[in-house]
Amino acid sequence: MMHTSPSTPGGTPTLTPPPPTVRTPMSASAVLWVTLAVFAQESVWNFYDAQVPEQLRQYLTSAGVIGLIMGLDHSLGIFTQPSVGFLSDRLVRRRRGRWPVVLIGASAATVPFVLIPWAGSLPALVVCVVGFAAIANAFKGVTETLVSDYVAAGNRSKAQGFIKAGVSLTIIISSLISLLVVDRSLRLAFAIPPALMLIMLGLSWWFLGRRHEQALLPEQPADGRRPDESDFASPWAVLRDALRSPSSPALLLMIGIFCFAGMWTALRSLTTPYATELLGLTRGQAGGLALPGAVAFLVCVLPIAYWSDRIGQLRAMRYGVALFVAGLLVGFALPTLPGTVAAMVLSALGYASFAVNALVALWNLAPTQKVLGTYTALYTIASSAGMALGPAILGTTVDLTGWRCMMLNAAAFAAVTFAVFTLMARRAPGRDTAPRTSAPHNERS
Image 1 (tube, one colour):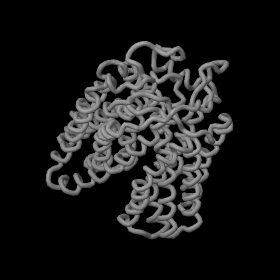
Image 2: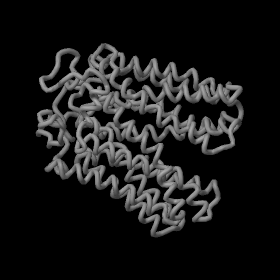
Image 3: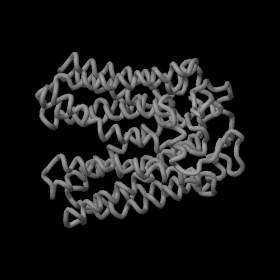
């Protein structure tokens, strides 16, 4: 894994090879309950993305305005997550850890979500939609940070593989609720996802969070502090420390996250019109093009996570981005249905390698384990900004060059990400070939 050197002149962290230490096993039960917690909140988000646009269409005819409102779920977290993540970092070594933030946030977000189908006017509906997005985004990153409290640094890529595999199943849950309940009772349909979220988060807390003090890792002691750890007075102090230099590895990684998250979201957003315009498919057939890639992601994300654990996160992400670019070039060279399917599969596999490693890589750049929640907010800022701007950027290139060049344009933008990771590798000599290891600890679940 990537480490930072706190003694670098000027205070800018640099990547250094990790010291050889003893590997310890990953706690399967801890990963299971953290996966359940992340799965719980993502189930609500998937149903939100699937049904809220249709709810807005009752009052709005402009797809642009609907997209603007839906885009709030990517942008609101930029403003709320640094502070909430910093608060969770302050709580992590206490008796209940980050769990109060997650449980209180989930309970509060349930109220506006359940009220969405009850809204009888556009202003009321927008208040419910924005209210849910603001509250749910505030604690979303905190839930994702839970894995760092119970899984040692050397095992976090593997843990992320299990979490991403579990999250990919939320699409099935959302689809079943839409298929079986929405047409019969819209109000019931909007009540089911938050109810499941509260139940699953409650189970996760009961079996894992209730014994938080016993499960803390040595990197996050319940009292005392390590000599190389410094306290930060505010989340903005953490952000300034991470981004103080244009050559900061955290800044470089955030640029890479911004570019890749943006192009992945753009590809997902524009594949359906691409297929209808260029391949002559129907809307339903074009929408189904995402299925082969989703299946490939689900099947391969765990092997990729274990493979990443052996070769290192930075190298795995570079290979993933290279595979993503290769898939897009295949789609450009073969603008046919088989070629497009192959492009979606290869791109999904490349994204899987990025998805399981990007957040962990950013955690490993933190100057102290005490600010991992705030570093999760850095990931959210970069990925959310990319998700918000990526479709617009790629769409603009399509307006200029036509649908035939869409995948080539996306490949060009994704190549920027590969260049960023290559630059990071050159500034971390020996890192790419260093095996992943972790310090010994007594991990309890």
